[in-house]
Length: 318
Image 1 (spheres, helix red, strand yellow):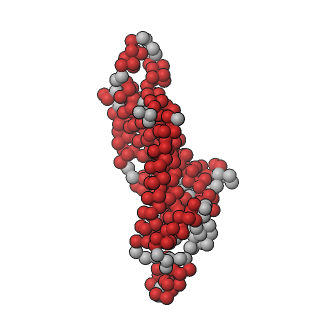
Image 2 (cartoon, one colour):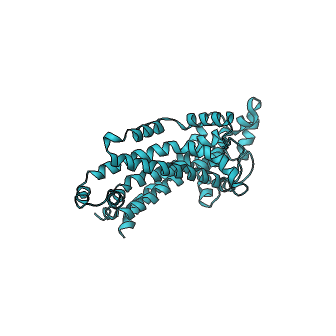
Image 3 (spheres, helix red, strand yellow):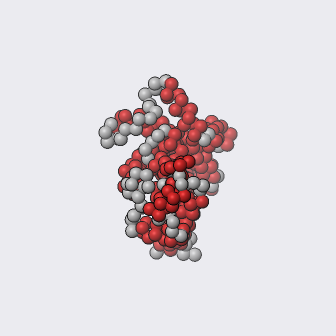
């Protein structure tokens, strides 16, 4: 019951946020200069052609009515049909989702593999001996994905270093070929994650190391690795869980730049192409799906908080 009382307000806030996102993306698309007719016909578009296309896709109706029809369709599981390809948007999302999930998982695994050990080592070493980790964190947080990705594309295009730029291959067809293509974009996405996890872990560990129970454990003669395993990691885990879940939500819903840069046929590239073509159904569904994924992952993080520290869930009762 405590957990339910803890989650109910968050679920209500999440639903309101998703509804707000749907309204904003729907209105924003219609405020962007140029429509589908202008993209399709370019300078040869006529008022008659624009009116015909608007009537065909229901764009001549009042905006409120358009939004209502779209929302009702969404609730029925209908994401609409692409204006360009005439294919159902939901089918395209489902076909491309494994690519985006794989890219996100590669970036997350790399970020955790480097960020957690470096953060723990830096946090236990103290402020005077964590200079290397602080430098890595600063560099990783300050280099934009587009800059790092462009550098990697140049290097691996000029020199053959096993990893490959472009030419996506599904994992089911050629696992090795798939990894050769996906590792570079995954590494590009992971650099910021390494810095984020490293700095958060370091700060959390340093804060826990000053607590009285750590001093008591040292006085009892416990081994340093046992102190870290039994006392430090659990008590420092909540802020780390926060940033990891937020970062994973970002990877699943916001890896557009890297997918476009490396021509990875995921949901991000599909949504970006829809924006260029003013394909409303694709962009509306893509942005809303990104918001739902991000919010859902943060809801799962709330459940993890309560599992890691029962005081979080108990606070809802008070």
